[in-house]
Length: 233
Length: 254
Image (cartoon, rainbow over all chains, first blue to last red; front, side, top):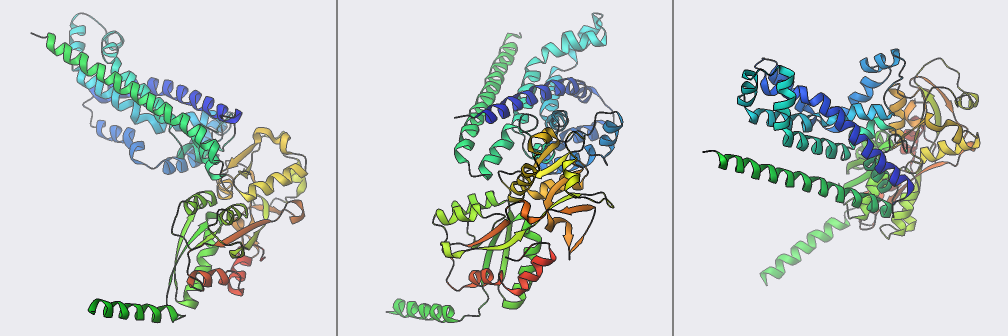
């Protein structure tokens, strides 16, 4: 049922989602940590900025990315000056767009996990002589792992589900920027409904499994939190 | 008895209404996004001339087709190609006699940089350079098919490789060039010409012998009332007033 171009689109989607998720964890962890702990007056504006992709239509993000990443844009000027060319129509461009677009889906669960941790474990570790990096990597991060995994699953799944932004800056090049969602759109538009079904059903199956894993994970976490409380005297 | 009387009156009113030819009617038109601008002008003139009220629904031809097949309440489809109107006739949603070419599009090779002299040689010089060439998706857009025909005729299709970027429709390939993300593009003349002059940049009007004509077809959908406002608009599209708008927007009159 799935043709060579369908497989290529799925494989590209998986690569994009994986690279994006890894970038998001690297960027999202410090942002989430800062948001969870800071008392700065910049907290609210930064939190609002991070959450913006939840509210903005993908077309708005795609439109501005096309302008910013293009040769007239601030970022496009920098990348061109650095000899990298401009980012639209490239895989790197899609990664940049996806990171921006999926940022709140990764930052918010991690921030919540850090927040629900409270200060106690960190302060205890500090009194035991752990430095700031040590406290983060050996205490805060392991204790917040369920939140981090939730964030990773959401970031990955949301990138797979991305459409509008990719459509606007991708250029629909098979194997480079033609992700599964864009290919489905092309198949529907060209009246190839059979092909669209094959790819769409694959995505339906994937989304269900990803969300099922997420809720099973959350269920397990809820149960373990409950057990932890139960153990307390 | 009284109910029958009321029914009789209602029927009488309906008969009178139906027999009045010049009442103001309502038409809903699905129009391919590349034709939305000229269609707005045509509709303004049509509304002024007839008193009918027209609602335009703009979208890609493929999306509009899917909506029509699934029962969308449109009276008229102005497609960007001939394929989807033919498919609508084949699906029994319109009579074959109610399908007609309303405009013929011209293809141009365009850049936003002014002062360049573009020719066929500018296209053949592209492979191996770093510049990108934007075309519309040949599977979806007739201008994309025409562009690919030109590239194949010049033997460049394979040579261009990843220099080629593909917009979902001709508007998007125009947008890629307009924002400078692609230096050149094959776009519809209607996007860059107004009143016979180039609005911006430099262009080479591709000779129409180099590709099959880009015919944009309209279909009057089944279920619209015979000789009603939708039929009037369908006929108006073939008239002198619409032809003047087509010419201004760089289309050829069929």
